[in-house]
Structure formats: structure tokens, C-alpha cells
Length: 76
Image (cartoon, rainbow, N blue to C red; front, side, top):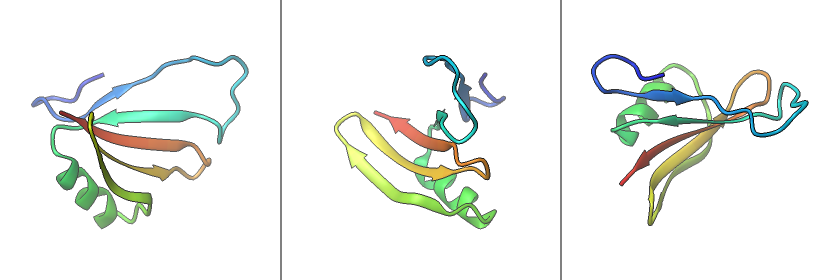
């Protein structure tokens, strides 16, 4: 699913069978990692890790109230 205006997209993949709440690893893609980071922090989301830069792009992650891990990425 991609949000209007070419912004963040959500990709849901069921790779493993019998996954329970708190075990999902979910990814959000954004064209502006810095803006996404600031927006989530301003809404009270506490990142598990700060923005990390790698050869493929940048990312940070956080956990939702069920314990699921969300990774926010900006690919190069």
C-alpha cells in the first residue's frame, strides 16, 4: 500500500507460519528518513535504534505496543 503523494508505503509479507503478536518484523519505506524519524518521535514513538546508514540506504526501528518490530527505511 502506498500513501497519496508518493510518500510512505506499507508492505505486508507473511513469510513464516503461525506468527504470534510481538514476533512480526514489519517494514515501512519512506523517501525522507529524517522527516519520518522526527514525525514519529514528535508523536511519542521511541526508536529502538537511531538512524543507521548503510550501503543500501538508511533506517531506524521501533516496537509497537504488541512488541512487533517496525523498520523504517529509505533506500538509495
